[in-house]
Image (cartoon, rainbow, N blue to C red; front, top):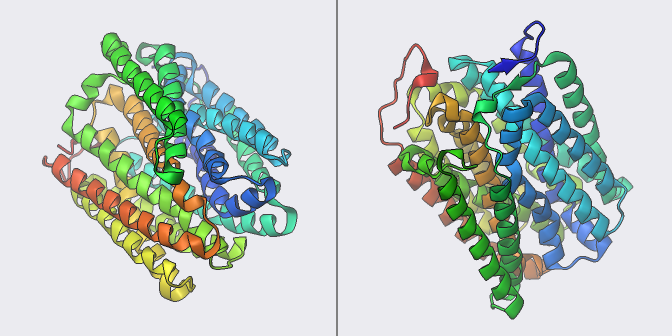
Length: 469
């Protein structure tokens, strides 16, 4: 490992920087959910355009996150974190001054590119700054801080939507951009590991184009559940490009952006399947619930933001404890129970279709989902890192982050039938979507149960070397 010359900085500064940088993604996702109805009204967007306001950010993020990690390994993780954070800030500023759909989509795409560069390098720097139980605690703190910022943002954003218009919500990102860049340049050492770098530009291009075509096809299909000529062509093109991606990665073997040999590890495969299912279902719910509360329940954007407050309280307060606990007692129970509890919360949320009263219908569902996510979030991150060899942790964490975003990308692309409705017409398709997502989340828990079958070393003197299977 190559480090820049100079004295070693305290790892807490790396934690501060990682929290400030990665919180950008959490903030942006949660605040956008509250603002989507206003964006739709202000830009006269249809259902497909509303989906793309979300997915044009998620697409480059999911496709480029591994390339971003490889660039950091090769040229410096701090350097590419700063570049990604700066691009995210420029994209946020472009969204803030856009005022119309087309420049908004361009700004969102730039945000996604920046996030794909900053997120893997943020977590890689944090992972390298701590060892053992301290690493589990730091990752838990990172997850908790992200959850807190993601919950506070809709409250501030909701107030801005009501009083200053939807473009103003993107200004919230700029202080986090400034803080992350300042701390990175002044308090965090540069780290390079060029021997780990996999600059697979062809793979990144195939993945981006394939996911883009497939997402566009799914978006068109989901509005009527009929395969039009354009939807069919784009779905076939997307599938072909993604197959090309798999074959290209197979050809590169150990030098691939995503070495296929990783999937011979049952733990790694099952954890990523669980991630895809859980984050897809939960991300879809976090998009739909505030949207329906505003559109059908006449909630203000601030009230819709407040409705999600239990999520931040539980994740913020308990994620550090869960991160530490999973290192000591093993991840199988929380990673099995958490997604199933989320599924139960999604089933409870179907009651919102009969009444949007908060304390009797929305709050119980949000509370149960929050408990489930609290059980799963921090243990999932630390277990993915523990499931592979030490030299593969950057690849593993980057791929797992990409899979989480990919789950949300696919689910949002399938929501056309819900988002094309307004008012009370939203409620019936909303309820059906929640039932499907509840099943998806529960299947994620089952995948973790059968995948994490090994013995966990409870009081190992070096927990970072423990294996979940």
